[in-house]
Amino acid sequence: MSQFRINTGSLKQSLVQQAKQEAKQEAKKKENAQTSQAAENAAENAEVPGDADGPDAAILKKMRKQRRAKKASAEGASELDDSLKDGDLDSETLTANAVSRKGGGGSDLLGGDSFGEGNRREMIEQYLLGHIKEDSDHFSKLRAEGQNDFFDPELDAKAIEDLGLKAPGHMVRLFDYWRHQGLDRFETIEKSASLLNGFRNAGKVRQLFNELETSPIRDIYPLEVMISLLEQNNNKLPGVNFGNVLQNLDQLAKEQTAVTGHPTLLELPKDYRIKGFAILGGRRPGYAFTPSPKEGYYQLNVETEGQWDFALLAVPTKQVGRITRELPSESILEKFSLNVIEASEAPTLEEKA
Image (cartoon, rainbow, N blue to C red; front, top):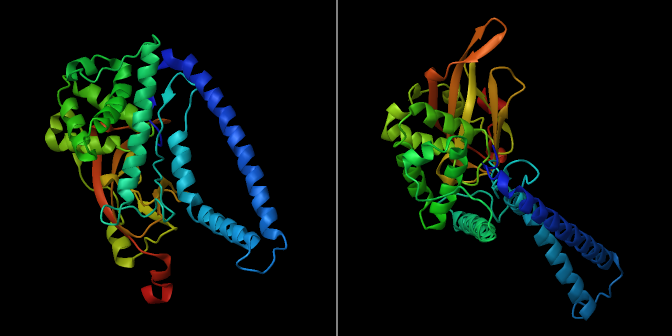
C-alpha cells in the first residue's frame, strides 16, 4: 500500500541501468556525508578557545546549529524523501516515485499537515508535482530513444477498458498526468471516477480497483476514486454500498483513547476482512494502519493530533470446508472520523473511571 506499480516491462533494461548509476551516486553521497559528519563530530569534541568572537568558536557554533537542525527534521524529511525516491527496477514493473501511505508526519517540516495549518500541504504539493514532472520528463526521453510506451492520455473509457491488465497502470499515469496539467486532487479524483463510469463492464471496474488497491500510491488513494464513483453511479460497483462495519467508534469517541503515537484498536465483526484503506482529503498526519495481534481488530497509529477523516472497504467471508471465501457482493464502504489527542492531554485511567 505504499507505491503504484506501472506495467512497463519493455523499459526494464534502461531503467535497471539508470538504477545502477543512481546507486553509485548515492553511495558516493553517503561516503561524503559520513566524512563530513566525522569532521563535524571531531570539531565539536575538540578543545575550542572560549572567545565567542573568535573564528574557531564561530565555526563551531554554526556547526552545532546545523546539526540541531538536521536532527530536528531528519525523521519526517528522510521518510518522505526515501519513499519518493524508492524504485523496484529489478521487477517486471516500474515502481513510480511515491509517498508512503504512512505519510510524512513527525517533524516541523512536513508533519502534522492539514489544509488549515500554514503551508504544509503546499510544500507537499510542490514536492509531489516536482517528482511527477521528473517522471514525465523521463518517459519522454525514453520514448524519444525509441522505447515503447502504451500510455496515451487521450484514450476514452472504452479504450482504457480494452487495455486489460494494463488498465491499472494507465490510470496511475493518468493521475499524474492530470496533476501535471494543473488539476487539483479533488478534480483529478472526480475526473477519474467519471472516466470509470464509462466502462461497459462493471466487473472490470471492480477488477481495476482490486489491482490498484494492492499497489501503493503517490498521493491519490484508489478508495477516494471508488467513493466518488459510488456517489456518481452505484451501478458501476454492484455489491459495494456505504455502511457501518466498525464496532467501537462510539466507544473511542467517548473514552478519548485515540492518542498520538499509540495504536488505536478498531473492532471489526468476526468474519470481515479489510480490502482497502485511505486517509481522505490529501492530509498527512503520519499514520500506520495494520492488522492487530488481537483477533478481530486492526490498529491505527496516528502521529499528529487533530480530527482526521478515513475510509475503509470491508468484505465478509464464508467458510467453505477448509477454504475461506470472500463475498465481494456484500462489501461495505465506511467513512469515519477519528479525533486524536496529544498523549500529554489523554485522560488517565483514574479520570476515565
